[in-house]
Image (tube, rainbow, N blue to C red):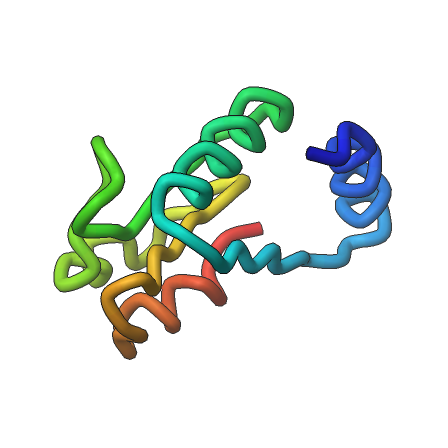
Length: 92
């Protein structure tokens, strides 16, 4: 994992830019990388997933309407869901 990621995120945030990080690979590897990223980048994390522990199921994405989170995780391992993709546009 590139530990300059927090610095890059801070610079993009200072400029008002949003970012998208795509993780692709085996499920165990994705879970490991996501856990590592969440441990080095501070902030609130909201996940939409049927497989990530503590995440909101994608079918319930509408419950997040009007809420903002510093970071969002959309788990597309089981397919792309229109409600979930709209969620990726929310937040800061």
